[in-house]
Image (cartoon, rainbow, N blue to C red; front, side, top):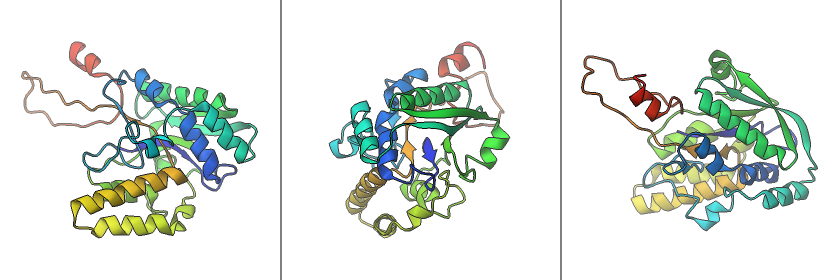
Length: 255
C-alpha cells in the first residue's frame, strides 16, 4: 500500500521539485515507524510499496537513498536553492480514518517540517470527508497525508498514483505528471516488457526518476500480520490497513 505526503503540485513553492525533495529528506521515516512500534520490521516506500522483486529498498540503494534518508542539512540546502525561506500556514490534512497511530504519525511529519521552517496547520478530517477529498486528490491548495489504494502488481500501484487523470491518485493538480514524457515512456515500457530482469531494471529506473521529481513524498510501510484464532469459525475475513490497534492489543485484549 502506498502512503505518504501529497502536496498540491500547482501550489507554490511545491511546484518546484527541490521543495518536494526537501520535504522528503526532512521526514524521519524511522521515527514514524517507531511511533507505530514497527521500526524493526517496517520498511520505507519509494514510488512503489515493498512489492517483492520489484521494489528497491532505499536504505540499501545509495542512489535511491539520497532522496529518502533523513538529512535536515540537505533539506535546508534544497530550500535555499529553491529560494524558499520558511513557509507559514500551509494546510496539512490528515484523518482519523486509519486510527490514532496514523494521526500521531502525522504530528511527527508536522514537527519534522517545522525544523526546516515549513510550518503546516494540521487539519484532522473525519473519514467521510477524507475519502471524498484528500484520498482522491480533489482538495487543492493543501498538503494531504493519506494512504492510497492497495496493489499487488507494480503497474497498478504506479498508475493509480502517477497517471494525471487517475481517479485514485491522491496528488492534487497532477497535470504536471502528464507532461513528464520520460516517466510515461518508462511506465509503458515496463507494462509490456515480458522479460522479468528487463522489467525489473525499468521499474528501478522508474523509482529513481519519480524520486528525483518527488511528485509525492512516500513514507513507510509497517508490517501487516494476519492472525488465526482456533476458537473462531464461520466469520467473514475483513482486512484493514489501519496501523491501529496493534497486534498485541488485538491478541491480548480480545479486540
